[in-house]
Image (cartoon, rainbow, N blue to C red; front, side):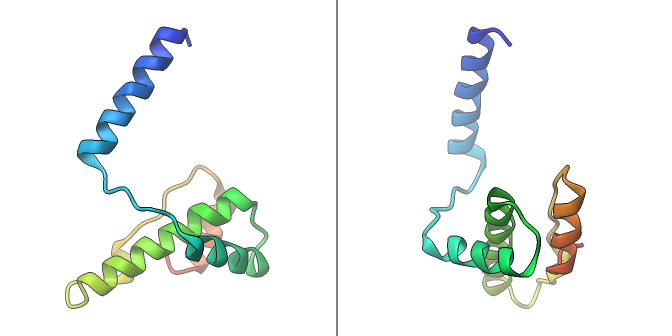
Length: 93
């Protein structure tokens, strides 16, 4: 990818984050949860962080909207089939 195209894509992503995504500050809790996930499952560190953050977001949304929420309403997407299997074991459809 040419440098100009790369830089334009990065700039577009940064703009999108400001307008289209909820950005969560990551504190120590997801790292602790990721370590716990690594004790339970054969995960790489970054995969454990990704899954721990997804679990935390799902939990926060379930707490914020308890009457309407069902844990199976939230999906986990990955191209890594092993990670998807572990996500299913953690309650993601």
